[in-house]
Image (tube, rainbow, N blue to C red):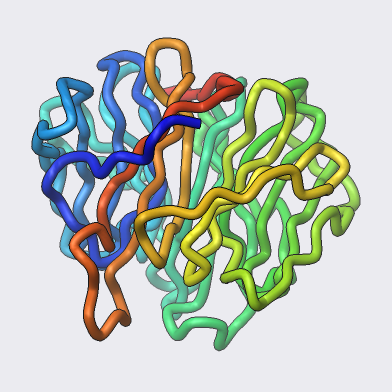
Length: 288
């Protein structure tokens, strides 16, 4: 791994859900609590981040769309923002789940969007994993979760990985890429609480799972069997999520948070980057 660099000038209260936008050759990420979607252009270390959109509520997850624009998982539903900035609400949860918001999400190769739901009062109610199909069908994929967080797929897309943060567990769930259905979850990793809350995840081309440890100031690489392979200390105390980006998917991008820190350091809340020895698995866009 190369040196870790702080990118841009933005500092997020709760940075999250970094995603590589292959169509524009840039990285998208969010500041959940301020409702902002940001884009980082790969023009150099000092390049400023650009605000793509501002919502009047928290944004828990985003995904690029194949036809342009973005999918945004909000506090009260899921919306599509087209390239001209027009907003179309695809899912409305304001009445069915008023005390919850969406948190983290990703797409599979068929263009389905998976996102978790968590209580607005952290940990006060159980959450669930949802699936939004390209035809607009919205279903519960898995319920009874303490706090669903990072989501990813194995390179062969036969396994969906899901972090249940407040259960301190990474689940490996059999996945049917044809139907989008899930099998019986396996508790693949039991995380030690002393090393920080398990938050977002990413999967590399060798099938290893990278996990951000919020409060632990580190990211970790786990083998497909759940064994810890590597731990990398960062410049921030609260890393939240990570993804692979760049034209060869050979850089790791890590978001972080400043929230709840009495005396944030300069880097806290920043977007970080470092070179990856193993490239990432390809990312996917929503089929809209």
